[in-house]
Each structure stands twice: as structure tokens, then as C-alpha cells.
Amino acid sequence: MTGIFWLASYPKSGNTWFRAFLSRLLCANKDSIDINSLKTDGTASLRSIFDYILGIEASDLTAEEINALRPKVYAYMAAQAPKPLYIKIHDAYTFLADKQPLIPTSGCNGAIYIIRNPLDTAVSLAYHLECDVDTAIKHMGDPNYCFSDSTRHLHIKLKQQLLTWSGHVASWTNGPGFPVKVIRYEDMHAKPLETFTMAAAFAGFPAVSEEIQQAIAGADFKTLKQQEECTGFREKPANMVAFFREGKVGSYRKVLTPAQISQLVSDHATVMRRFGYLGEHDEILF
Image (cartoon, one colour):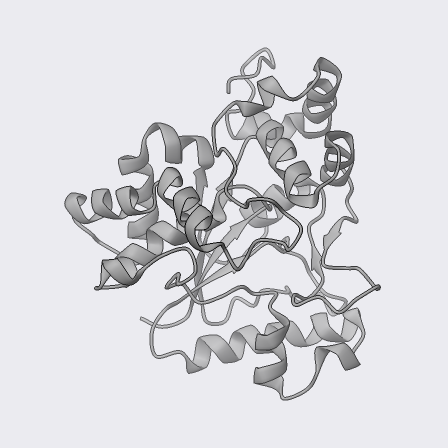
């Protein structure tokens, strides 16, 4: 099998944790793996990949021109790869001016979409962006919100359209013309063996239980945090104190005000109900 498996998520939803797990299935020498040597195949938005494959500088193009070329980059990667590629992506699944998807179906094996309770996501996003929680909540409700869209400097990543949190989830779970396996961050915590086994099988790893358990243990959040404390993490934004902070389920209860919780639920209730974050009477379940 060749082609691309997309590892998709809204930012701060567990993508790095899942990639650390997957790296331990991909590599025979488990001792060689740490957070700075993940064995997955990079990030869709990296400017360096775009420049290398096309032989032109993205900095010489407009955002619209870049997006028009991005599907060609991914189709080329899928066609040239001698093995399956596992690529991280935070972009929403969107369509371009010519009605073609940003992520082409050609050469795509499917996507694993990692979803996290938006209440916890808001807290982690605020920490990641070094902004207050109200600003993070506003970003999550903004259909025009993007990552790496600053015009003040050249970012190492291309502009990524996120939509709202709900829009991002819906775009990946409703839109693609390829299989999508959804896994919840909370289930990665509560029932790791079942959740990671399901995801691994979808990604082409019919691994036995012992292998899955070893990969889960090697990608434990505490282990990742300790590695960052010892060696740093090259994906961490320069001004952030630490990339791996708490990783707990329900940590929003110590941070969000009732008004902030109400705003997030109001903004995202439909998707929260669909994926089990709200109960029959809109009670919060996590």
C-alpha cells in the first residue's frame, strides 16, 4: 500500500500524542524514538515541503496561488511515496475557487480525525497562543480564523484555514470523499487499548495487543512531557514555556467561568451533541 493517511485535528486536540504512538508502530528500533524524532511524515502546511516539491518559493506567491497548488503537492507526494505516508494536518477540509478540495482524494487512503471537548480545547488553545481564554473562545467561533496568517514575518508554515471549531469538525467528518475514522481525545485517555487499536487497524497496522500496549506506554503523556523537559521540543512555538502542559480531561473546570462555558456550548452545541460531549438535555458529559 502507498498513498497518504491524514492525521487531522483542530489544534490542541491530541495530534502530537497520536503521532508519538504511531511512531512506535512505524519504527523497529523503539529506543530511537522521542518527541524530536517522530517517524510520521511531517506536516501538510510546512513551507519547506511546498518549496522543495514545486521548485518555487511560496513567499513569491499569494495565499490563493499557494492554495491552488497545494493539492498538486499532496498528489505528487502520494504518487511518489514507496510506502504509506502519515501526515499531520490542522487545515479544515475546504474547497478551492475551482470547487476542488484542498486535500485531493487521489492517492488518499483516508483520515484519522482526532476530536477533543471544545471546553478543554479552548484552555489549551489559549495557552498555545499566549492569549486570554476569551480570545481563544472568539477564535474558535470565527469562521475566518486561520493559523500562520501573519503578514509581519515569514512563517515556517503556510496559512491554514481552520473555520470555527464546529466547522472544522464538520468539514472533516462530513465532507471528504474518502474514509474518515474519528477518535475522541477522551477515549484515548479512558479506553486507550480499544481506541488506539481501532485507529491503528484503520491506518494499516493489524498489530497484536502487546504491540499496541507497548506503543501506548511509550507515548504516555508523562513520558512526552519529561522528554520535552530534558531535550526541548522543536515543534513548540518559540515563546511558549512548554508544549506538553497537562493533557487532562476536564481541566477546563478549574479555568473557565460559567459564562465562558455557556458561550462555548452555545457556539458548538450541535457538534458537541453529535460526538457525545452533551447529553440528552444538553448536560455536559465530560
